[in-house]
Every structure is written in C-alpha cells, then in structure tokens.
Length: 463
Image: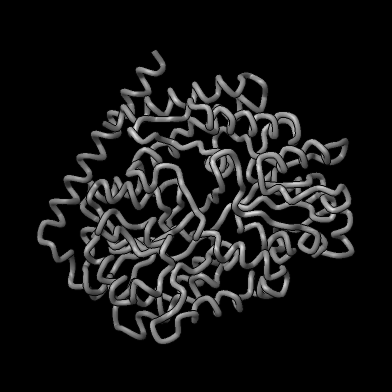
C-alpha cells in the first residue's frame, strides 16, 4: 500500500511538471526569448555567503563593461528542481543558471527547458578545442550542446600516508588494497575508514557510486533496464557494507561527521570530494583539523595525507566526480545571455573558479591564443584567499585533482538516464539501503535487490 501511494504521488508530481513544461514552451514559442535584454536574471547555485559576494562582484563588472544589468538569485541545490518547476509554470524562468550539476542539466534538457542552440554557439565562439573534451562529452547529447561546462570536482580517497607507510600498506587504490588497509589499521581509537551511511543525504550515494563504478556496477544495463541487482553491484554493496559496518564509526555517519572523524585523527581513510583539501590544510577557520598533532602544526594532516582518485576494481578503473555548467534557458533573452556566459568564461572566469579552486577545476583550459591561461590561473588561485594549493600539496596530488575529470564516470548521465538520476536524488533509495546495510538490517544481496526494485519503481513512475 505504501508503494502504491508513493507511486501515485510521483505521478502527480510528474503531471505537475509536465504542465509546467508546457507553460514554459508556450512562453518560449517566439524563439527570441523575453524582454529587451537590458536586464537578465541569473540564478546561481553558489549560495554560500562569500561565494555569492564574489559572484555579485563579477556581475557588477559585467554590467560596467557591457551595460547589461543583472538580477542575481542564489539557489540551494536541493531546491533547484522545485524552483525550476515553479518558475516554468509561471512562465518566469531565469535567463541563465550557474553551477548546475549534470543530472539537473539532463532533467532540464528532457523537459526542453534549455536553449541548446545558444549553448552550442557559446562553445563554438569560445572554441570547443579550449574545453576539456570529457567535460564537453558530459554536457552533450548527440550533436546538441545542452550547457556550457564550467568546472569540476572529483571524489577522493584521502588516507593517512604516514600510517600506511608505517604498516607497510599500499595506497588504497583498489578494492583489495582498500579493504586490507581498513582491516589492518582499524583498532580502538582509530577507525579504518570514515564512510557515510546517512540515508537522507546524496553524499552517501556519491561515496558508494565511486566504489560501485570501479566494480563495474552500473545503474542500467545495455537494454536500459535497472541493473543494481547484478553480481558486480552485489559485490560493491558487499564491500561498502563491510567497510561501513565493521571498520567505520558506528551510528549515523554524515558528510560532516566523516570529515570530523578524519580531522580528529581518529580515522585512517575518508571518501570525500576534492573540496576537502582547503579544510584539510587548515585554511577554513570554521572547519579546522583537530588531531593532537594539529595543535602545534595546523598542516600536519595535509602533509601526512595522500589522495587516490581513480580506484580499480573487478570492472576496471573508475573515477566519480561532478561537472557543473552554465545553462541558458529556453525563454532567455538570447543575445544578452550568450554575451553573459561568454564573459563568465573569459573576463569573469578566474574569479569564478578562484572562489573555491579545490572544488572548481576549470573545464576551459585557456583561449585559442593562450591554451593554458586558465590552468595557470587555477594553479595560482589562493584557496580561501590564503595560499595556492600547489604550495601546500605535492604536484602529484594537484595533478590527480586537475585531471580527475578525464577519468570521470557517472551513473546514467551518458546513457540518457539523467531524469532518473535526478529523481533518485529526490527519493534516495540507494542511501536508504546503504544505511540498512551498515546497521546490519540487511545483507549485500538484500541491499542490491531492494535498491533495484526501488529504482525500477521510480523509473516506472516517470514513464
């Protein structure tokens, strides 16, 4: 009965979204966008106070340079789909949206809410050869450029290199090495790994997907059917369950608690995004390392931590990460919006990715006349306005973060399943079974079977 009610609710939401999309398409039928283009509305998912301040500064310079005014609205990523639906229903979509994740780009494209021709013209004008090829691939659908890829972050396994060396352990760059290290180093006062199991947070799925991809576990098979109840996925659930159930801290583990445990020196490894790096180096006053050695040496953990990006498993080698983009909407004033997005990839670009270089690796490498311009500016960007990451971490670490997008894979995004991926982020069926797995309420086979059934139900409700 509960499943029937849930499916009925999803069908109601799907119907509401369909009505919203129809309204947006009617508003866009002139094909030239609304307004006279003297003012454009810009949504940005960079809603942290300091990042919003930097964004406003870029937009003010854009207005001074071009005469085009902007209205900035900062948006929480978790509310993006809801706000898009409401704005589309009212015929009041913004002109452009910044920092849009891949699943959201695909969802908007499926609803015909993006101006693919405008995005394509921006990329052509800037030079497709100046962009990272993999980032362009993630934001294209056949010959259509859905959005303009701006920057990326990668998922990392950060580990205590000093503890590994002392124990004679290899870096945790494979299923076997990861499990061996967790088992060897786990002891009272030290967890083998800090691993998320929060059933209400997409971060838990991101952590799992990183390992699942390496194991050859994919969201759907070649026939397009959900494929989570397969031998590769059962193996991935088994690994995650053993790591989180036996060698991670007990109880609910969140994005914040996993970081806190590693920062306190009570964990030998952690799976987190590259956005951890500035905090690990003690550059954020609100999130400082607290290990005993850190009191005398705030950069103790940064100096004694290694990173692994791509991990190898039964399915080969894979790297999870995210590419965020600038979207030009279907109802945008085309000329002004294209000019704005080009500005964000030229005059405003260094400030945009420089607001958080550890988590915003530029997808555009440079310009036709200076092919490495933005890569150099990224290397020199000061994390938290303090110091470039290259002055804190070895070149090997910086290069792994820089080139992580080249090895990046994602569930469903390149298999035309972006709408399903986005819907999964709303209901979180995988984090829910991972929480049950970590607490011993189910086993790997049961987790795979439950996840497969729940995702299949979500997909059915979208048809």
